[in-house]
Length: 264
Length: 244
Image 1: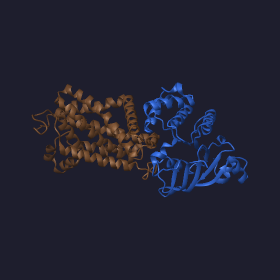
Image 2: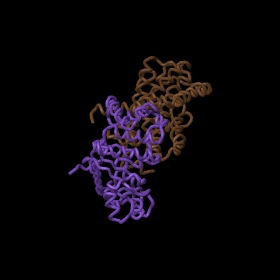
Image 3: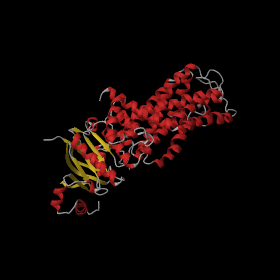
Image 4: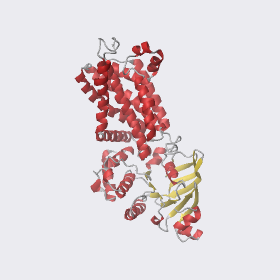
């Protein structure tokens, strides 16, 4: 297969993801409403209870709204990753996954294309959210809007890869509810998305260590620093390494020797 | 000697502790039509999953036009077009979008897809429906879209797993005619699994699969004579004890 064939394949998968995304307007709206609810309602109620000290990358005292925006970007890509995982399980149950897997291009390449397409689609949602967040006085520097793109893309790849791993493990669509309880919520709440880690340390040391070990914390911190034009190398390396590990596990999960149909 | 489109040699496959295929071997020559018969649970769908590399055999080997499926999956999969028993179309996309997605997965450029799409949609009398969502099509049209899609990348082997299930008699006959025409005009080999035996003609090469074993092979005529059966339905009952 020529390099052009590989490119055609990627563009075809991306086009399909975009078409599905455009058609599911309610998905776009709910992906915006969810973080906006946190930003408008939750943050308003929480700001009085939580004082934010000056911590990097911020140089002054900030409002709670400003603090949680990177975490809410995280939740957009987290839900998007789970959504694409859900659609993989749905595609498998409906049979359309077979169309992807019987392509003559290497299966690992196909899965990476799928992952990258899902991540690119979630960028639309993130920028739409950042635009609306400006109305609530969350106005990061202009350069932040540029740097947040690669940071969010990497976070979206990591969470998309997690979704792929889950989709290879989940036998039926019905089991997906468990993912929300046992993966999505713990991942979100045990992170720096809603509260800074030092604050958590004051409250409970064990939970602090769990938060610090959570790759989602590092994805959020990568986004947080990028949004203020800074690079958090520790967050980058942890997010990148987790992405590579999860992608490799997902590729193994879709290996015909393990058998996608074997479990059915 | 004609080229072998499929060469299955000593293939076995097991689901957990239950055997699905037991050391089966067969060859399908290029340009030939072969009917694969067998009752439910005979192993037909498992065989299709192995031929399309959704599963990998526990032992034995599969070659498609000389390309070993486990060593050169890309080259081997390029040769086949497949229609699965369960529809694999995206219902919310149009006919053209479904075909374009498939073309892209086979590395075809936008221009090549368009060109091939026009030919295949015309062949199956679907040109007027190109911009309709698949959800709006009836069962017969959906099946035709799936076959048009399977032919988009010009495969030399077509695998059809119960492709006529759920269709009315007229649609079944029309599909059957189309597929046989492909064998003759385009020299495409066809492996057609069915339990609707009226779809077969006496000259068709036939494989009968039962509980994971190939229990009979040959032309329908030869098999009927050999087993002294009046028709294929009776032959199947005689050999498998099941009504097909």
